[in-house]
Length: 148
Image 1 (cartoon, one colour):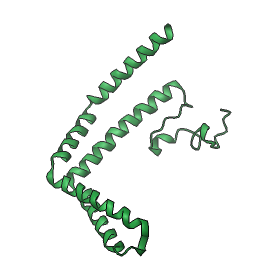
Image 2 (cartoon, one colour):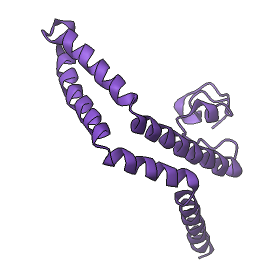
Image 3 (cartoon, rainbow, N blue to C red):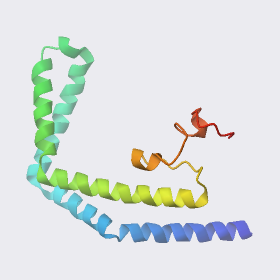
Image 4 (cartoon, rainbow, N blue to C red):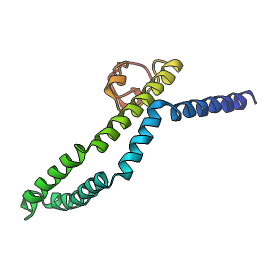
């Protein structure tokens, strides 16, 4: 019974932490940037163009440089990607998304580290992965030398 009560209490704390993150300035700015991106006709046109060209690109990739439209599709997709990435709202959204992801990574590392320094916390960010001596974690056959 104690383990169940403790588990419920931990889940409630996790919900509180999630709510705090959701109400943070970082999350609020992310939502604002997402809204601005979704409501910008110009940005959405650039994104749609890129997605359409991406489908053509995947078709061309099946045949490689032997496809008759290879050069034109490759050039068009590069231009569309650059045009999309240089859009102010797309760039602002990507920065906000990275900031929110960094906050979530920091929280994951703190929670995992408070339990044990051997806890694997997948962050996808090499900055946070440097604290471990394991090359990919104990379960991956890495050369960390632990006896797990």
